[in-house]
Image (tube, rainbow, N blue to C red; front, side, top):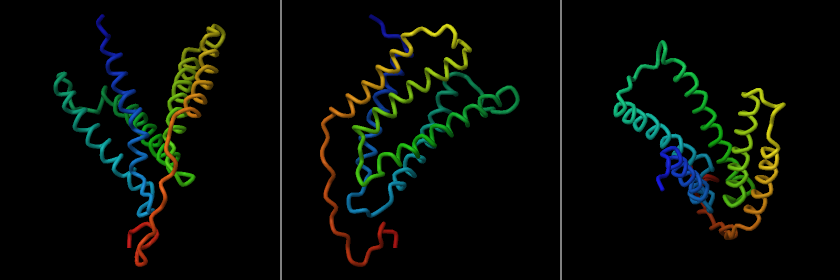
Length: 177
């Protein structure tokens, strides 16, 4: 059985994004040496490197030009919009992972991905102007997704919060001074 290439790439994305939350949870400083947004800067740097360098390499391999003007401006405009949504999503995810005093990838990630699938389905529905001919399976799937998110988040094994180590007497709250 040959797996279609889009499915291979989708599985790669699912693997990377599924690991994203737990890896981001490791960036937390139990000692509160820095804010949760220090790892976000690393996220931004990684996006910058992988998106620009990786994108340019693959563009070159496919014989594409590096132009983003004229007839290519649609790629620049919509790509920037999509990248902005991705970056704002990563900012929101960073906030979700570190609010409340502990990283909770076992709760946050199912909500993020279940919610993302639902938003994609609803936006596709609106864009297709097909609200009058919606298959009831869509609504069953959305309700099923909600149930699955709750079941996964509730039943995923996870460790408790790490105890905070006492900070050195001469350090500032986030270790920047």
